Length: 361
Image (cartoon, rainbow, N blue to C red; front, side, top):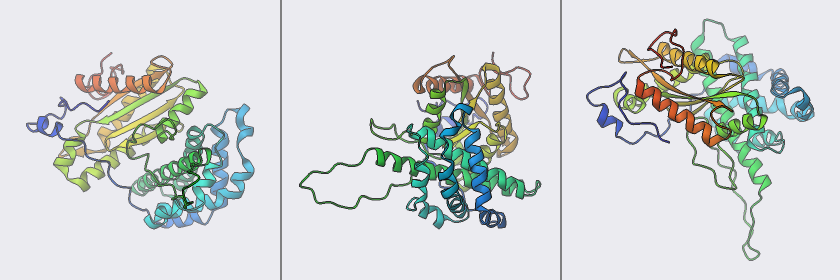
């Protein structure tokens, strides 16, 4: 379901109807490289980073499944993979080379037979391990550097995971050729930025988009969780009013603000500019609503356009209360976000004592 083009009561303007009818702008490009000394410093300690990654992988598994983590594989290949990820954080050229390197295949070998969900877990654990190591090195006052580094790192890990999913899929479904057709070299998997742009629905043989694979993982595990859809109000209008570079900066700041409001185990995926998904494990209705309110409030405090704070409408869906499959949960989150926007509130079903606009019960 596409976001509503109806004018939002908090951002309405004389030209809102005209701008709202324009087609959505494609997702913007990759975050800029971060060639700070801290990146080089971390790159000199690949064994430590791989150790952190291994611990994060173990933490992501229930105790009775911990034996399934390929410890020897991570120990053998993890240091080189961590170094390559940091190279890509600091250089676009290194990021471009990542897809054609052996490293996506390294990540693909961590597949436990479930395809995308296992690779999502591995990539998220890698991002968290390196991000926490960077936070230990960066002075607390240098929040801009940490924000830029975590943005770029999230992009690199999503890029790596998407390519690894293509490798895993190609391995599981090798191409067939006619007996008369001449053999030819298969092209390398094309990297796809699944964290920043919306993917078309997969075919019966294709891999799922990365954030949907994460959702499938949580569905397969069966525990309670919340699915949040965070949509910036008037996102198309920002491109027109602010211009491309300033709008891109606003979207990045909103994404960083959203991430800062989440808990350690929550997963944030940038589907497209102004549209984020959050998977929040182990929350009920009140916990998911409180988290949604925190995210929206953080965005309002972090970014503004022409003196007016950015606002976000957040849709909430609960597993298993609101659905037991991907379609029903995402559909409920979409409907909830549209209801919040129509009512001029952050989130439907939130807490009336929260700061900001009144929330509807």
